[in-house]
Length: 295
Image 1 (cartoon, rainbow, N blue to C red):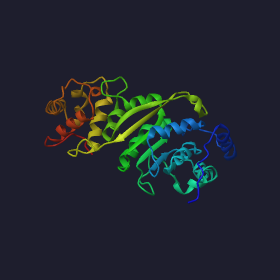
Image 2 (spheres, one colour):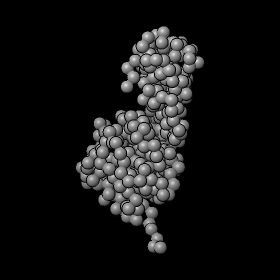
Image 3 (cartoon, helix red, strand yellow):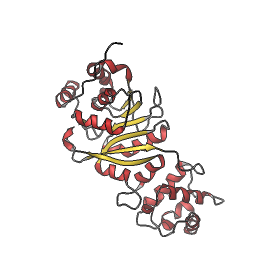
């Protein structure tokens, strides 16, 4: 068999040259901060655990820095890019910097927040430098959309990484932590400094790794559990008896469901893990009418 050459990765000069040729100016609106350090994208791929032959979904590939590092380890890459100019240029960039791997790459021009299907083989991994302003909605949307995803690693704003990986009872635990736990075991996987980006952002970045697990219940739906989570955190200082009053149809009904689930009605939402939220939801739906406002 003929030998294949490894991809060349993008450095600061290549990123700026590509951007200048395309007339691209990174915008805050789309959270565009391009990675200019080859060691960083190699580290992301290494921490993700992606192996040769895996189909990987990448969101927001930009100019292709992380894409090339994924191709370098032998992955097949499906990239979702919202910017028409960047999406149109990516195949040419891959053909130039990774000609022997170009057949393992495809780009989809779409908004990852509203995409309803991914062409090609079902992806097993999600690896992405997610735009800061939509990172949590994108991650949760894709976890829900793609049951084929087994693991992943995303780079997000540092405080968002803390929230996603936070355990119950911690100061940063909230809706993102609880909802992510429905899909996966989530952990912090490291920090990324500002100087590996162009332009350098005003905040630090963090890596979040996750491993898929089966849904914690089939007695109630994910949407029903998420409605309880949303209500529990809508007023963080409220005890659950009050926070769930509207959803349950009254404070007494909320208290009864909480007691049936083995939860102190004076507990606050930030103290509960996904299993407790499931138990509350099951108890709410065990009543004759179920919670009010159920969709």
